[in-house]
Image (cartoon, rainbow, N blue to C red; front, side, top):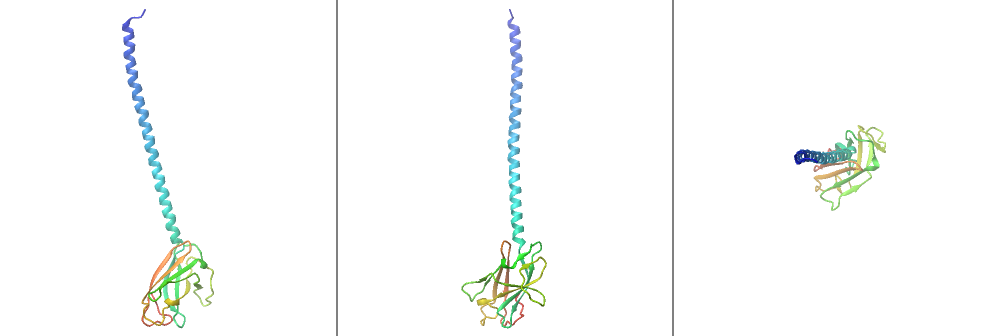
Length: 189
């Protein structure tokens, strides 16, 4: 037969084991909380990286086909067209000239003059129409003025807004300052 003293000692040892199991449960709980926190931080970092990548891609795409205007002149003998000397922005890819659209907004026209048919010429003596603008290739873009022609017979058009849009690319905005007397070759910016 066993004595009661021996059983009492075994129970006390069991209390020490219970404290060790409690510490182990707390330790495992801390590891689980740390794992969940790490997963949230990693997920947030991935989302921020994706947003930054998307913003960078959108910015690069909007600049990818932007046209830089260097000079604008009144064109033709009657000064009814605009001659725009331009090139693609640095870093741009080749652009089809059929993807170039324009808007001209002036004060004497109720609706803006819009079109998708500017004539893009090489800036050389041949003036041959070109189908594709290449990076760093200066071009001459001729746009008919229509109701917003530089020399339309009245002086209402002192400031004309010109927008050049490239399909899938950026938009270029220029304000043209029209003097009181306009002849062919008059600079407008």
